[in-house]
Image 1 (cartoon, helix red, strand yellow):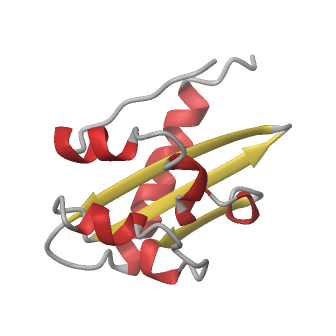
Image 2 (image 1 turned 180 degrees about the horizontal axis):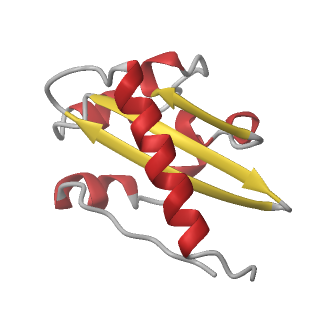
Length: 110
């Protein structure tokens, strides 16, 4: 089952959809998309060779958090961002718990 939704600004979506941009997004580097984890964007230490995160910041997406769940060859991601402040530890935990519930209720497995 595939599902995608975005409430990011239209300008950012147009920028991000440019050919190859997704392939250099440090948030989506395969080494980060294994296992189950939650990280603030500021904690991801992969070179941002195309300035993806800086460009996101230019659209008001300055502080972000990513929740990754990988199981049975399937990877699920929740990306959130805002302009005002870094996500707290408690907020990252809440995002993880919410995403786990979402995946449980919308899972194809019985």
